[in-house]
Length: 227
Ligand SMILES: [Zn+2]
Image 1 (cartoon, rainbow, N blue to C red):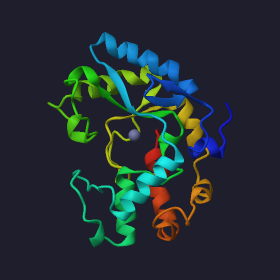
Image 2: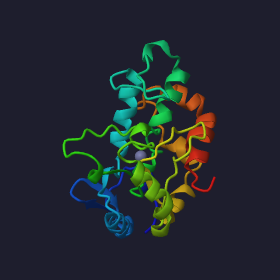
Image 3: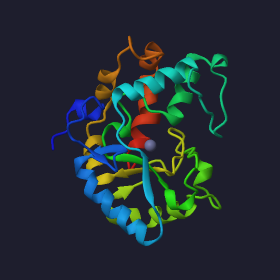
């Protein structure tokens, strides 16, 4: 299937398929994911997706609410930040640790998903999606270890398993690499610039001002699976 700027930026959904009635994935990811899920089940894991495809509008809402302080902004240790004490640049870079620039989220592609293990916790467990839930001794540590070892066999990789100073460590984030690599090839600075609507994006003028740095630190290198 051809990749266009509309499928890159989460503005088009025709190529997506609902999985477990709860989230959308790219049609080409559904079979590999079900194979990974079946293999995980043999080892006692109930691999579930909390977040798959995310639209441009949804990412824009998350961004704007974090920029305005309406939605909580976390520091590197997952503690709340006081937005009013930060400069525009500090605010943008704090948002980018945990949330992508609208148009630049890997979740727009339908190739990426946030996962957890429903078999490891009680039915009423409130998933927080923080690194300490995936660390040694925590409920999703065993799944993390299993994925690190075996997800490659099914084409999946974990692009944010290591904190390289850009996007924070996200041990819950899986990507279907064969397809995601095709999206990555198009993800250059001119594409990113074309996705920015300064009228709709909070702190948009400051994002433009620091775009070269943002691109290198949060979009290009951290997003490259092999980079
Ligand atoms: Zn994610």
